[in-house]
Image (cartoon, rainbow, N blue to C red; front, side, top):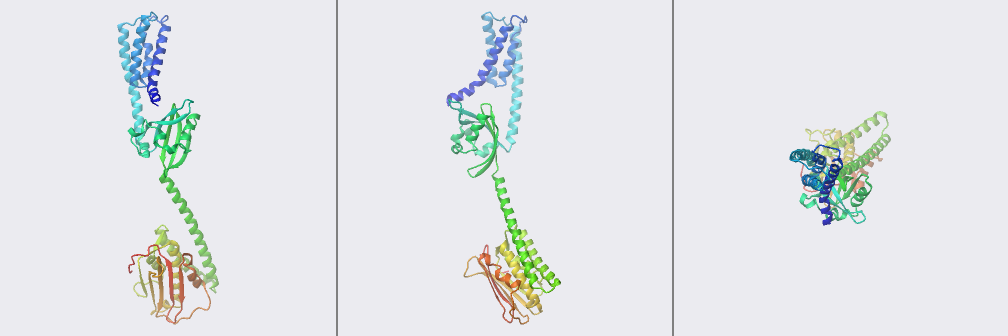
Length: 428
């Protein structure tokens, strides 16, 4: 491993040596055809190419050029460089070196600036190879700030380290080490999404000379949003199906209990309007839950005259699920509609008391009572209409119950339904 690291550091100097050797060979070959004494100019391309690799390789090429010129003169295969030529070579070398390094530094600065502000992590790896040329690990050579944030590491703890030492689970993860090795071997860029450590990432891997470059983004938030959106769509589909089923049942039962088109229209319109008011109430709470008090007041809005005192509404500050809120809305609408036609709300003296409290025998449930008084004497209906059927079935899905009685002084209805937070009761 130490030899591999040393080999990586020596490669730029080896390249500088090759460039300078090529210039020296050209000097020898052209000696017979170029009468000009200024031959050290042939070393300028080698110097420029070496300086682009770094300060050290550039200085090495400069010294090697002078040494080569002296050796070639000593063995008689090249003309001696005069003071003028040496002076020009030195000055020109300094200028070329400065220009190349400045251009290189400007490129590095631009690259660093772009990477510093990038929200996408970028990591450059050098492949650590076995004797057969296959990668056995990848060494961190560079990472931008976004990558360090994703890795939760510092430059001094990351650069120079090995992927499999830092992240052992990457060895068998199909989108990490196996994919990196495949891209390095084939040169084919790869793009994927994967999960590791409870986080989701989007990554692109491409080959880069003796290693690979990896871009990575943490898309955990996006994935969570997609999952939430998927659940919302499923919930919406469920709501729409339930709504259609409720409307179809409402239409069918309303038709059976009416004798004229006008009566059918009026009853169905009133029921749909009550359903619409509760839908609006639930929409304000993103269809999660609703307060019992809000459902009661919203449903009774067409009958509720706060100045008359005909309603006595009393109950704790509880919330119910959207399904329970819709069931409660339809149940209260039927009770209020019947009371307005035949019961307590059909006379000026009639009163309705509505009260809800936590049920003493069933924790997590609310018991609501509807008590009519002061109205005309009533009789139990001879048949079972839509309202009676709806009341009896309204809360059955969640284990609730409805008990409907017809004493002479007014309808009595007791409803038991599930609460989402049946604690801390507070009188309204």
